[in-house]
Length: 165
Image (cartoon, rainbow, N blue to C red; front, side, top):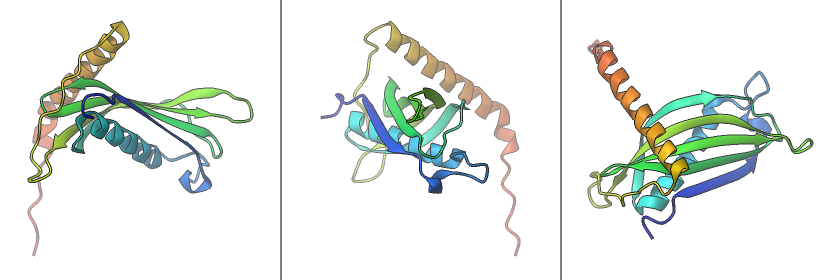
C-alpha cells in the first residue's frame, strides 16, 4: 500500500565477479546496488514505477572485499509532489572478524511515473516523525540545494557538439 513502506534493505555476499583489478568491489557495482535498493524503496513508498533523477553526495568511505556481507539500506527522507529522496548506506561486514563498516553513502532522487503515459505523478507526502528524521530531511534538502546551484553554475559547460557528416 503506497505511503507505508519507507525503508528497504538488501543483503548479499560480495563475489569475485564484483571486484576491480585492485581486488576491491568497484564503484560501478556499488552504484548499481544503490540504485536497485533505492528503486525498491521509492516504488514501495509511491506504489508507482519510478526513475532515478540524480545521485548526490556520494561518498566511498571504505572498500568492500570479496566475501564481505554487504547490506544496502535505503530509507525515504524527503518527498516532493512527485519526487522522493532516499538516503542509502552501504555497509560491509567481514564475516570472520564480525567487523562492520560504512562503505558508501549517498542520496538518490526518484520521480514516480504513472503507468499509462509515463508522466510524473503525485506521491504520498512523508513527514519526519522525530529528530533523526528531521536531520535526514534537512540533509536531503541541503544536498538538493547544492545540486541545484552546481547545475546552474555549470549549465554553460554542457555544450552539444554538432554532428559531422
